[in-house]
Image (cartoon, rainbow, N blue to C red):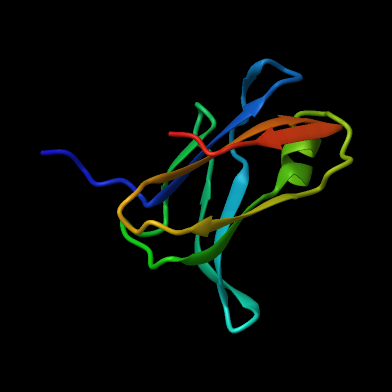
Length: 115
């Protein structure tokens, strides 16, 4: 029997150090009536992954994942230029899984829709 995973997951990689970004705080929010409402929060594991970020099913809508990169950079003795990274996205298909990877360095970041 497989354990269902969260509807939204993430993986954070530190491209400067060449390793997963461990212990990054991640917040999942949903847009409701013009405000962001907290859905879930988690921390990346030793492999930089968040496999349990909120429920297995979410309704369609606008969401945001925010990564606390400032604390991470401080803990790894790196400069802090982006203290947080917020990625807003639209969850359009309630039957699909949404994976939000983050490639991170002190002065740049990139993200894409993963699988």
